[in-house]
Length: 184
Image (cartoon, rainbow, N blue to C red; front, side, top):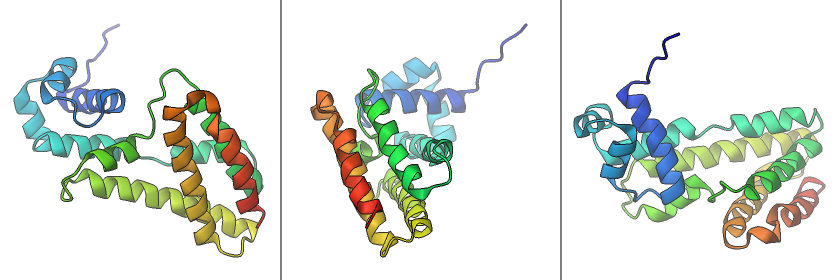
């Protein structure tokens, strides 16, 4: 059986996802090229440079599919679906490979306001907002958009706090607060 090696574009994306999560978006181009085993020309040919690669790596990682899967596994009740996210965050943030939220880290690290990754991060966060607002609407929440804002503040807080105090299990504390939001 012959295994086909992914092409340079796919190797660059996979490497960028890996290294930028572990080391941040300021990881060197040479490190990316070396791990991906591609020539510098491929980077410019496929992405126009490192900025384009970073944005595309975030865009192709940015999916609400994991949140949907967690919610779907929790059943049809919007309350249980939202709270299941916090149970999942507890599992994720206590794992040995957890390094925080790649999107927030990128947003904070990239000081150039024109960097293409900013739009990707904002689109991802907007997608999460829509997801939670829809669940709160189904629940009959009096202000689903505001409730979704509150849930996202909790999620961002969990992802940041778990980096600085991993033993604190912030998702558990946030779940109790999420219950108050969902039950409003």
